[in-house]
Amino acid sequence: MSTVDVAYCLANPSQCNYCGKKLCNVLPFSASATTKSCYQCDGSDCLKSSARLVGGMATERGCISAASDLLGCTADGRNCATCNIENDGEACNGGLFPTDRRRCTIGTTANAYCPNPWDDCVQLLSSGTRKRTCRSSLSELERSFCANNTNRCHFCSADNCNAAEINFNYVECLSCDSAKDIRCATNPAALTSFVQCATCATALVTSAGKTTTVRGCLASLPADVSGQCTVTAGSSCQRCSTNRCNTANFPSDRLQCYRCVDAPCVSHQNVRLEYCPEYRAGDSCLLESNSDGQLLRLDCRSSLTESELNACTGRCQMCSTSGCNDPMAYGTSGSCVQCRSSLNALCRSEATQVASEPCTNPANSQCYVRLVDGVTERGCMSDLAASEHSACTRGQNCLVCNSRTNNCNTVQYPVAPLTCFQCDSRTDGENCKAAQTGEAPECPTYDTANKCYTIVQSNGDTVRKCSTAARDAECGTASGCEVCLFRGCNTKANSAVGVIEPPVRTTTPGPINDASTPVVSYTVKIVMMLGMWLVRARTSIAQI
Image (cartoon, rainbow, N blue to C red):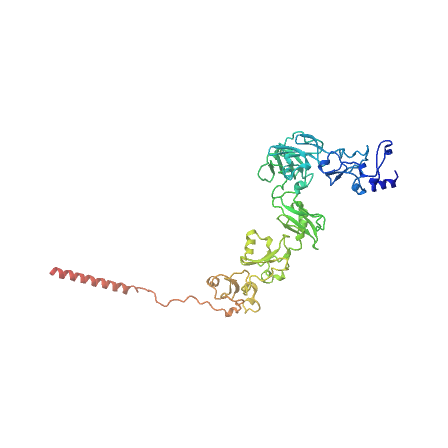
């Protein structure tokens, strides 16, 4: 047939008839549908013979009535089969299609065809009941069971491969070594290499000074390592006996950080959230940037050498919670003024003159200013211990602000503290003795009991100071001393400071020489008179 004839017949199948025997086209031909006969079906009833597969699994058989019926058919015939009508119109599409359609043991029937031509066979054991079937015939409940109990379902890809009874007396364990695949430590969930074991284990194995993470069968570990394996969570080795139980992070406190060594570390394609390859208790996440603010590296502190850590000084921020070095948060954590008034006099009331600094923790979002033993302290909330953080949050001698607001923690705190002139003429010179002018500085430490003192000794030495002590304690043996409670109140020249009067002596004369004699004589006289009275009284009684 010419190309034109073939095209015509495809477009007008009722006007053409095909046959495959010698001189078969000598028979009378009538262009009517009754001269053609094809098996016509759809779905599972078509399993033993077919013309076309629809949607991958559904089988469809029928007559080709238009060229569109052949659309989607591949050249290799994998999903379509056509045949010429022969033998006086007897159907030709009743054979098996595809010829290599998968056969599995279904129930007790072997060599049963699966609905999906390229199916897998399966054998599962659930609640003591064993079942054999095709993968595509599993119910949703059975699919879920197999997904959660891979050691109770066996899939295979050969005809009748599920016929023999499977021994399901095992658990599947992840098998890997971080020395060969770093994901064994950093991302075990991404691995799929499982082996059949009696017991699973995960261990840290140290060799030649390097520690690696190893997962697999307990029995496959070195004896000195497996002997340390415990059921409870440990830091060197842990064993377990349930299916795929050794896939979790190990040890459980291994820190998870964003990692990137190809600057700039802003593309999600180059940034990965992973567990730290080297396990270190108390590890930290690290974020390194240059002077322009470009992110150079995201990593775990344990992954850096000592020289790298030294070079990182001043450019690195570190934190200790999972994923805390998120590059998406970088640049939004802001900076805080960080100082103590005991070390920097500007810290208390002139903090705007102190340069703010990036917080150590890149995830920090708040600054604080607080009083600590009378000293004003400013810094990042993330640097406070849990109890201090809680106290600041409650406003206990502390103010908190948003670190994304520039220099937010520079407000004066406490408000309007006492100011006193502070000097010592022995070290600061004669000016300390003169009347003070100008603005008095704040007291070094804040205390509501603070008072201003001017203390003058008999030789003229003068001290001006803040103190919470009582007047008697501060003034002592000084010849002049004054105390006041107002800002900058101790201004007087030392010559004008009030003199401390010595204790007033009493003018009542005390006993001198025999001053006690008159008292004694008077007492004796009374006793003598009483004696004489008693004698007379007895005499009178005797005469009666």
